[in-house]
Length: 350
Image (cartoon, rainbow, N blue to C red):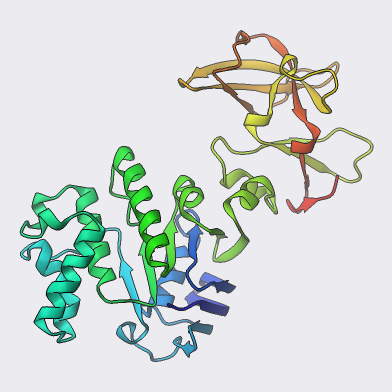
């Protein structure tokens, strides 16, 4: 196993700065998630670690080896799993898993032992004689992970490996993947645009946008303490509500931020709770089983409802009626309020 050090890494494609000065330390044995939308630079960063793209400048160290120069992928001690899994259709599951061992001229007995060990770990031993076309998407994903595992890599690099699975399979595969990584304790870098995957899998999350790192932190840190309005609205579903503060006690133009699950009918709170009240003009209510999403806007004293859409996420345990087309008294606990500079978007003190 090995950690990864990335220092001021850049990758330019002409005028496009796909990765723009990324510095990052990935700990030995850590499960790190690169989270971002299309074009954020996350996959380009992963491909540079793998040796599939050469950096324009900067350094990459895997363990005690600097690899950003002419070190080929096979000499970096990495194993990569792609979104497509890249299985050989004409080979059985056993032959697919064994392929990297055969390519490195591993003795046949050792190949047999390692393939069966990996297949047992991922509960696919009974599929070893089948072909990829005979497997489900989740089973093909396990084969790809087994093939990577038998190489004994220092680092796993996973590029959206669950993207082709349906929602139910993704939940199961995510659990399998996390348990597997905890068991083998191999440093893992995982690329996704799916924040549920990022929050559920990552020991830490790196939020990227336009080639730059916006925030690095645990899932809880990124969700509860976003460093700017981009992270606040990118991480979380529904996203954090942002509302321009009209409070003379707050210097400069300030945005109030609060998560939808903290925006609740005032009657839910006790008389001693320290809350910030709002008058909430409700436009629409969505019933989603365990939750209700309530859409509307805040009404300032003596003014019409604002144009900014505000969302409340109410658990089913709150049985208060919220009629559409009416204005209701809502509130947010003051401890749940976050403050951002309206001009720069950066987090600031209240």
